[in-house]
Length: 497
Image (cartoon, rainbow, N blue to C red; front, side):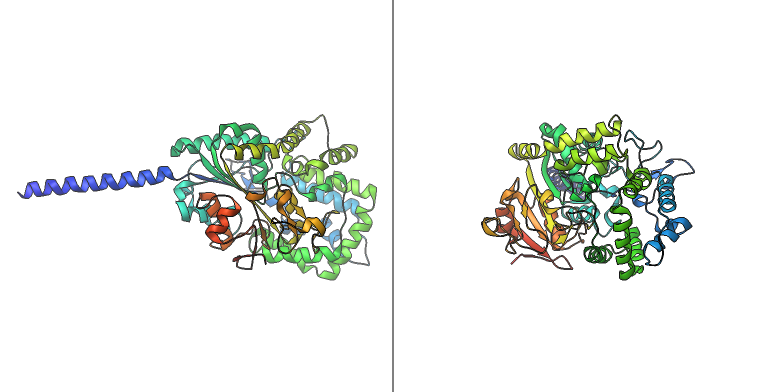
């Protein structure tokens, strides 16, 4: 009798275990895997990979401590910020050019990276195998990945990390391979993608070539750079500084970039002092930006060896500005139109021109699309477009794919200020967006600085994992959020009133 009882218990335990595992398996099968895409600078880059000489390239090539140890750089920069002395610009530009060249951040003339360079964070495994990624930063796309992991489990969240310098079309090909690998690993028919900043440009290239694969369930485009940013107008010598704009901008940057290499950079700048910074900006405008010979010298001797051949920087030029920027850079010898670099950026320029059509295509064929564009901050004060509303980097009009936006500090007037798509603060009319019913605006949160467990991060996550449909009506019904929301310091979201 005891043996029979034990046998029955074993059978029942087996049935229960099988039943439980089946339910768990079914639940996992119903979860759409999420892939997150970072933006500019999102992956650390190394050279001499796999050798005893392996070393990390400084983020964007900027190592404040190393630059401060260079006497030619330090002495002349200090002179720039004084009234009594004038920098030796020949010496300064030569020293900066040599420093940047030696970082090996730049590509060759054909827009290809130096042999032996790459990233260490390319994995096709889910983030349950790479949990350090979830807490590697307390901002940007790792926060969204962590928030998504809380919702659907880290085993269902993947990070597509890439060398952000590489041509978008090449990166899109690599993303295609990544998506295929994730689908094969999970058995899922589709994935959902949340792309931040430059990741939006990668998605633009992906849509252009692979949209008919119909293997993406949700496109969550977060302050995306697919249509560029007006700061790239610097390629056509649209350059100007205004100390009244620069100083508040720097203070915003210092406040928001707490921790990491960027904090060191902005603290070093702030340590110079407002008066000396203002004086330096005046000198820079007078001696370099308003001086054709010096301006050209700066581009050729400093910028070209630093970032001149990196496709990504060219590919964030706004579509309408591309020809003028190329013409100017070719004229001064910064860009060679016979080079492989030009072929790459010209190809992506055409992709950029087809983006609106491509985004409409995937939505028409069943994909859910949410565009999130932040506003409430003026543009980078280096070009004539510093009065654009931005998230501190990407212009709101570009991120939203066409919103009508008032200049920073002003309001829309007349017919532009009327209608159901107009923000209550009269700054934005979303009616002119490509997808007005799928476009959301967040005021007061700067580029990529999302905090874990905040309303903002949860809102983005809910759209990404499918807790709510990606349209105004569904979001308002479920969460009470309208098209225009604002975030406080803790990123609690409330409707703009």
